[in-house]
Image 1 (cartoon, rainbow, N blue to C red):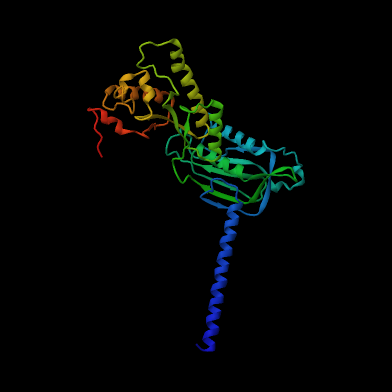
Image 2: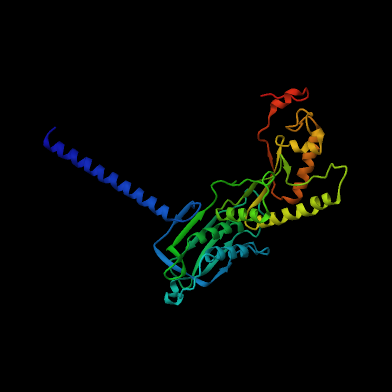
Length: 351
């Protein structure tokens, strides 16, 4: 290789090296920028700047141009929770008059396209959030197809707000913001097993709140009610000896508690999906209904050859439908020990 070729080869390697290092630095810088964003989960699309705005102490909710009447107060309550999440940990008593009015964020305008607030699987949860870096006056703008998408947007807005310990004011840093987001997965849920592990209603409400903060919005699922070794509800459909306390629990206390929880969850955009775990994990059912057992020596899973088994399950689902408005119910199906059926001649397991 002559001297000219050798020099050119060195120059090519140097250029490639510089380009590679530039790419690495760009990727690292991008990773650092992403790490700086305290938004969870990360939005589908996000852009931001480097300026700071200061939240007015009279930060307000506006709905100019929105088709959603908010007769139920879902949006208004969501805005109140937004203010609580932002302000509760701190005392924002700084003097905002020190800053130009063009840097004071006066409120958020929420525009919702649909007047319907029914919550079901497939409800549109998308939203677009924008915050300008200055204005006269300055308002954040949130657009969503449904009120539940707007609730997501309010959660995201709360995550770009920070308390400044020097100015003692709430800041919206890195303005201007432009965020577009929608769920990557339409079904996102969390299991609470209240059949085997009793939990008081206030604790379950806290779980619902935490789900809304993380945008695990669509289903508190499955809420496990019927499971060995005890019941989370009481069934009297096929009881012969019915005490008045059983009627009280079954027709007043149980529906009331669940109505309160379902309503609480729905106002935060969360469906409650109830579960009965069948045909396994139902040994305790036979304590009241012995014919549900395949035999005295085979007490689980449920006897799927017995028509009465399906009558009981149908009765449970009928009661569920009066309380849980989500169009799905979870039937468990886990840990079914089909080898127990070997003692019977009426059930045959294939496959």
